Image 1 (cartoon, rainbow, N blue to C red):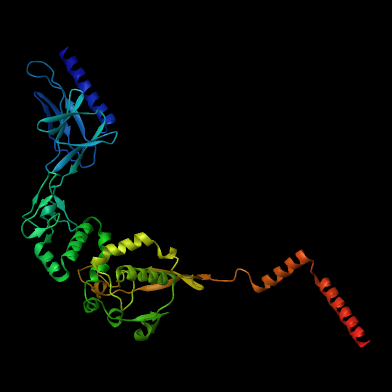
Image 2: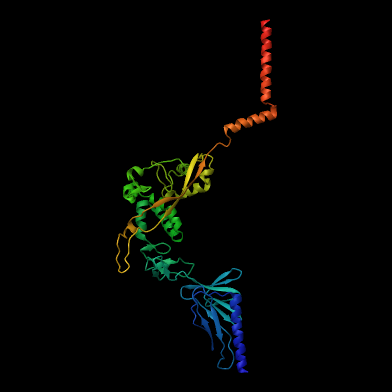
Length: 423
């Protein structure tokens, strides 16, 4: 009887856990559990890796007094991780732990607050605000706040700022030195310094935002400084060849200007920015005599774009399509410059450093066909004349015979008038 009772209890526990895994869809990531304990009963727990299903197999045991104990399995997350319970309807709640008591799930929010949970739910451990952080280089830090400021303190409480910085740093994650902010304020003013700080914070979550605003940041520099960042054509290009024949670099690399639809629309846009903001958008080509917009005019540029929309729809912007355009289908390939690596020893014949200092660009036509976009007359002159004759013949009955008869009638009338005049 005792063995039958133990077998029945074990069967009930396994069935209950299986049903909860099937219907409850429990997915517990990185659950730090070694065993599930309820007084004298021990349930074996299997800990799996992140984003894998967690399974709990109960080993039913009798207590010392011969009575069976209720099953209980506590789910807890590792340090700096939050236990998130999500019901099938989509509502989520952050808990400290989740436990199965008999056939009901209980969730602990705090030491004195326990809530009832639905039978169908998902459990997952998510990294908290103060979880260990790994940057793009693979370096690991205690938390996000200590990447730059080792003296920063991380706050788990969402009602408080995530990081409490030391005296030398500032920012949401204590990544900016106060001395840097002071230098920017002295050179550009507090308003621009504030905007730059906002850009830095925004770029951490959206790098594309920083790329879009880089021209405006560069506009704060003088023209001499910006020229010093670039290269001249002779410094950048070593040689040019066309159809395996060398070309004169100085004669070939010339600055040329061609009318294009995009250039016309860009000019309309820059004229509008100049009128509204008193400067030109540095992200596009502008007049050499106009002042490029700095960060102080960023909001003005954004407002113009929102209010006026695409320049192609402006009634004051007249940009006709190109009369003739020929498009070549080109392809580009990329490969390391050739050098030989021996098989037997670690030596290299050639110049492998060329791969890091130079680039050879080869452009070839994949096929000889080209796409031609040309403006042509919708109706030619021959078509106009033929259509006019057809319409006149249809409406007025005009034909070649009518023309001959009209000429003959005119001759007879003129002859009659002449004879009368002679008489």
